[in-house]
Length: 165
Image 1 (cartoon, rainbow, N blue to C red):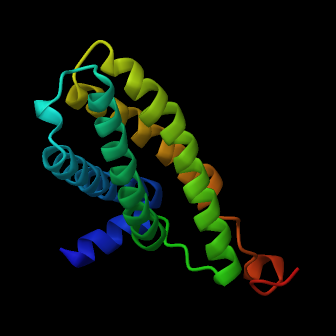
Image 2: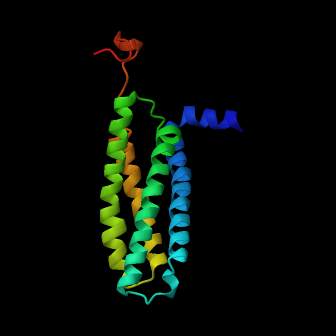
Image 3: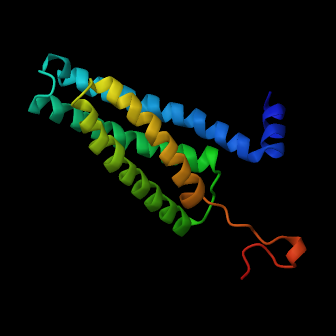
Protein backbone atom coordinates (compact mmCIF):
# COMPACT_ATOMS: atom_id res chain seq x y z
CA UNK A 1 0.00 0.00 0.00
CA UNK A 2 2.83 2.41 0.87
CA UNK A 3 4.52 1.74 -2.46
CA UNK A 4 1.29 2.49 -4.31
CA UNK A 5 0.96 5.78 -2.42
CA UNK A 6 4.57 6.69 -3.16
CA UNK A 7 4.08 5.89 -6.86
CA UNK A 8 0.87 7.92 -6.94
CA UNK A 9 2.63 10.82 -5.23
CA UNK A 10 5.50 10.65 -7.72
CA UNK A 11 3.28 10.27 -10.81
CA UNK A 12 0.50 12.68 -9.86
CA UNK A 13 1.92 15.11 -7.29
CA UNK A 14 -0.83 17.75 -7.57
CA UNK A 15 -3.60 15.19 -7.20
CA UNK A 16 -1.78 13.62 -4.26
CA UNK A 17 -1.38 17.06 -2.68
CA UNK A 18 -5.08 17.81 -3.11
CA UNK A 19 -6.02 14.44 -1.62
CA UNK A 20 -3.69 14.95 1.34
CA UNK A 21 -5.12 18.44 1.83
CA UNK A 22 -8.64 17.02 1.89
CA UNK A 23 -7.69 14.28 4.39
CA UNK A 24 -6.00 16.72 6.75
CA UNK A 25 -8.76 19.26 6.09
CA UNK A 26 -11.29 16.71 7.32
CA UNK A 27 -9.15 16.05 10.39
CA UNK A 28 -8.81 19.80 11.01
CA UNK A 29 -12.58 20.15 10.68
CA UNK A 30 -13.05 17.33 13.19
CA UNK A 31 -10.72 19.10 15.63
CA UNK A 32 -12.68 22.32 15.09
CA UNK A 33 -16.07 20.67 15.57
CA UNK A 34 -14.97 18.61 18.58
CA UNK A 35 -13.66 21.67 20.39
CA UNK A 36 -16.76 23.69 19.44
CA UNK A 37 -19.21 20.99 20.56
CA UNK A 38 -17.39 20.35 23.85
CA UNK A 39 -17.28 24.07 24.65
CA UNK A 40 -20.90 24.79 23.70
CA UNK A 41 -22.05 21.79 25.74
CA UNK A 42 -19.91 22.79 28.72
CA UNK A 43 -21.13 26.40 28.53
CA UNK A 44 -24.80 25.40 28.14
CA UNK A 45 -25.53 26.85 24.69
CA UNK A 46 -28.50 24.53 24.18
CA UNK A 47 -30.18 25.97 27.31
CA UNK A 48 -29.97 29.54 26.01
CA UNK A 49 -32.60 31.35 23.98
CA UNK A 50 -31.58 31.33 20.33
CA UNK A 51 -30.47 34.75 19.03
CA UNK A 52 -30.14 36.14 22.55
CA UNK A 53 -26.96 37.99 23.50
CA UNK A 54 -25.61 35.17 25.68
CA UNK A 55 -26.37 32.61 22.95
CA UNK A 56 -24.46 34.54 20.32
CA UNK A 57 -21.59 35.35 22.68
CA UNK A 58 -21.23 31.72 23.76
CA UNK A 59 -21.40 30.45 20.16
CA UNK A 60 -18.88 33.06 18.98
CA UNK A 61 -16.41 32.47 21.83
CA UNK A 62 -16.64 28.71 21.31
CA UNK A 63 -16.06 29.28 17.62
CA UNK A 64 -12.97 31.42 18.34
CA UNK A 65 -11.32 28.83 20.60
CA UNK A 66 -12.12 26.05 18.12
CA UNK A 67 -10.58 28.17 15.37
CA UNK A 68 -7.31 28.78 17.23
CA UNK A 69 -6.77 25.11 18.03
CA UNK A 70 -7.71 23.93 14.55
CA UNK A 71 -5.43 26.52 12.88
CA UNK A 72 -2.47 25.26 14.91
CA UNK A 73 -3.30 21.67 13.97
CA UNK A 74 -3.74 22.64 10.30
CA UNK A 75 -0.47 24.55 10.11
CA UNK A 76 1.64 21.69 11.38
CA UNK A 77 -0.10 19.01 9.30
CA UNK A 78 -0.17 21.12 6.11
CA UNK A 79 3.45 22.13 6.47
CA UNK A 80 4.66 18.60 7.15
CA UNK A 81 2.36 16.25 5.24
CA UNK A 82 0.57 18.22 2.52
CA UNK A 83 2.98 20.81 1.15
CA UNK A 84 6.12 19.18 2.62
CA UNK A 85 7.77 22.45 3.45
CA UNK A 86 11.16 22.00 5.02
CA UNK A 87 12.59 25.48 4.86
CA UNK A 88 14.96 27.11 7.27
CA UNK A 89 13.79 28.82 10.42
CA UNK A 90 13.20 32.20 8.72
CA UNK A 91 11.11 30.53 6.03
CA UNK A 92 9.12 28.58 8.63
CA UNK A 93 8.41 31.81 10.54
CA UNK A 94 7.31 33.52 7.32
CA UNK A 95 5.06 30.55 6.44
CA UNK A 96 3.58 30.51 9.92
CA UNK A 97 2.88 34.25 9.78
CA UNK A 98 1.27 33.97 6.32
CA UNK A 99 -0.67 30.88 7.38
CA UNK A 100 -2.08 32.47 10.52
CA UNK A 101 -2.77 35.75 8.66
CA UNK A 102 -4.67 34.03 5.87
CA UNK A 103 -6.62 31.97 8.39
CA UNK A 104 -7.40 35.14 10.35
CA UNK A 105 -8.70 36.80 7.17
CA UNK A 106 -10.81 33.74 6.48
CA UNK A 107 -12.03 33.74 10.08
CA UNK A 108 -13.12 37.37 9.88
CA UNK A 109 -14.84 36.90 6.53
CA UNK A 110 -16.45 33.54 7.12
CA UNK A 111 -16.42 32.49 10.77
CA UNK A 112 -17.35 35.84 12.28
CA UNK A 113 -19.23 37.89 9.70
CA UNK A 114 -21.09 35.23 7.72
CA UNK A 115 -21.47 32.89 10.70
CA UNK A 116 -23.24 35.61 12.69
CA UNK A 117 -25.39 36.59 9.71
CA UNK A 118 -26.42 32.97 9.23
CA UNK A 119 -27.23 32.68 12.95
CA UNK A 120 -30.03 35.16 12.28
CA UNK A 121 -31.79 32.73 9.95
CA UNK A 122 -30.65 29.27 11.05
CA UNK A 123 -29.16 27.37 13.93
CA UNK A 124 -25.51 27.28 14.91
CA UNK A 125 -24.70 23.85 13.45
CA UNK A 126 -25.98 24.46 9.88
CA UNK A 127 -24.26 27.86 9.96
CA UNK A 128 -21.02 26.23 11.04
CA UNK A 129 -21.27 23.55 8.36
CA UNK A 130 -21.68 26.12 5.57
CA UNK A 131 -18.75 28.11 6.94
CA UNK A 132 -16.54 25.00 6.99
CA UNK A 133 -17.10 24.39 3.28
CA UNK A 134 -16.30 28.00 2.37
CA UNK A 135 -13.26 28.07 4.63
CA UNK A 136 -11.79 24.85 3.18
CA UNK A 137 -11.90 26.30 -0.35
CA UNK A 138 -10.42 29.63 0.70
CA UNK A 139 -7.70 28.02 2.83
CA UNK A 140 -6.56 25.59 0.13
CA UNK A 141 -6.19 28.39 -2.41
CA UNK A 142 -4.27 30.55 0.06
CA UNK A 143 -1.98 27.69 1.12
CA UNK A 144 -1.34 26.40 -2.36
CA UNK A 145 -0.65 29.67 -4.11
CA UNK A 146 0.67 32.03 -1.42
CA UNK A 147 1.89 30.34 1.75
CA UNK A 148 3.56 27.10 0.70
CA UNK A 149 4.12 27.97 -2.95
CA UNK A 150 7.13 26.18 -4.32
CA UNK A 151 9.56 28.14 -6.37
CA UNK A 152 11.34 26.13 -9.01
CA UNK A 153 14.72 25.07 -7.73
CA UNK A 154 17.59 25.41 -10.18
CA UNK A 155 18.75 22.00 -11.24
CA UNK A 156 21.51 20.45 -13.30
CA UNK A 157 20.02 21.74 -16.55
CA UNK A 158 20.71 25.36 -15.53
CA UNK A 159 24.21 24.64 -14.32
CA UNK A 160 23.51 26.20 -10.92
CA UNK A 161 23.55 24.50 -7.57
CA UNK A 162 20.37 24.52 -5.52
CA UNK A 163 20.20 27.59 -3.34
CA UNK A 164 22.72 29.60 -5.36
CA UNK A 165 21.70 33.06 -6.68
